[in-house]
Image (cartoon, rainbow, N blue to C red; front, side, top):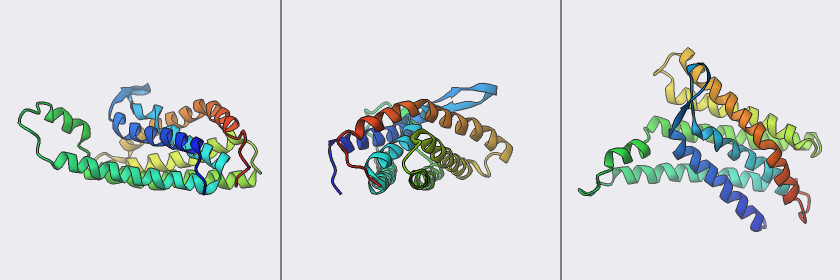
Length: 210
């Protein structure tokens, strides 16, 4: 497998969006009907779109490679965060409480993040490449939307279930999950024209891939 400059740039964007979702996503903002959304809705759809772009231009194997690196990066980030929180703080470090509020993740939330990404992103990659083969490489935006719809549904359902089952009743979990899922999909739709333009640009001087 040959990696070129374009792939390294795409991988940088992919991992940056993933890390931003896992860290900046701790902040929530008000939404419709007295619900709240994580600001990660602006970053996480990029993660799914990036594997679609890569799969469209460079093929299945590179797309799966991005997924594997994203999964490994997520696990390593959690391990490094755990180590940083376990190390004693210096006496003059006066921001320990704020630091812990930002970077301390419960074990349950950590497991939820890894499992949701493991299944949701994998299904997005597989379904996008399946649709690409079935539709003979046509209708990129449609294929991206359908694969993201499926992948985001699984990601949201798995994360919410693992993180909050037994903590909140199912009706409350559904109330939290539904706007989160809908808005992630809508943001993916908003980004789709940009993704299509990226595909067109990246395909210049690139041999067709499967």
